[in-house]
Length: 101
Image (cartoon, rainbow, N blue to C red):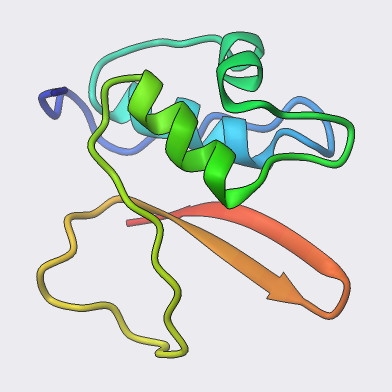
């Protein structure tokens, strides 16, 4: 597993499909690893429509993280969650991943 090395510095997405890979790259950077978004796109199965929740989990595990997906109607997080985390936002016909710390 990774050890925390730095403060959270956001890795910006390179195009409209990159929000998920950029989130994974941000978490990697937070834990002291610099992983190119192009590599993350490949291992997470990003395509022209973006990345699925399963792709986020698969990519995170491939990068050495232990993770799980969860669905919650709550607007607050459980006290046992370790931050930062990746959240999936859905609003109307739009979907987006972001890092929440």
